[in-house]
Image 1 (spheres, rainbow, N blue to C red):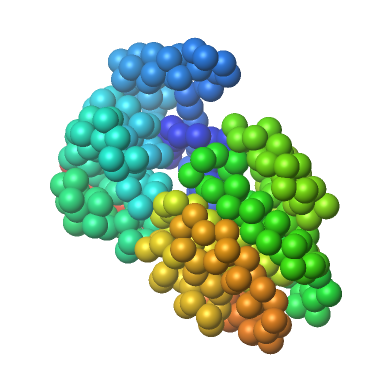
Image 2: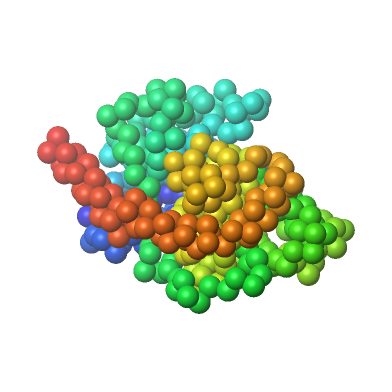
Length: 353
């Protein structure tokens, strides 16, 4: 059997998804994505390819002899998949909603794309219950929604508690350097820590369009000795960074069910994250992590200091978080379920034929 997968296949989430399918099935997989071009005409090029692909991709998928089409994001690749007319069609919502931003001039258009996609889909992935309201509001058939996180590979994301160092705050940030993830808030919090003479190291892992701007802010606030940018790293190296860290920081303005949070919880870093609906089912404020307000460097710094003043809380949380992820967000448990769902869709299609 064969799967045709369209999405951002160079991104960590897609790579983990595809790796899990290959590991727990005998599916052959063919992939496709829209190539990004830098510069002023990059977005125009992307829109042009997006429009064209609605026409030419159907032919390519059928020539591939695929049995199943899987598409990331409802309003982009999902809509392309819906336009092909191919079935069975599986789509996934990536954030708490894919109609984002929610108050933009483009919002009604994106909502229209989402409704069409959800109407055509045979199965809809929601990585957590928090995603359901947006899906249902956009007309998704509840019977087609499957709620389960992909999970993280806990064979890779692991740690030895006795090797953790507790003489310095060693924090990691693993989100893309884009506006929604508020790295400037973290840098401003680092300034507060430095002014209070609190020993800290904050590694910002990854790349993005704001890299240069954030490096300038780091220099302006004179926290270059605290905040370090690693740039993009191979995802296979990420577990070692988390295993060395004792704190994980993520303060976006919006988030769905975060695989990065699962990686941190499985990899042994105490989570301090934005107080958002996607985080609340996983983080009990003051017990296994801290939830902080959006866009509030002072509150973030205060939470880091509060955690650091209670290392027993942090150490207990690291242990309980590992157990929580093993139970509910374990790649080795969840990916075989995904594969079973896909095979059932193909089986039902063949029966109908």
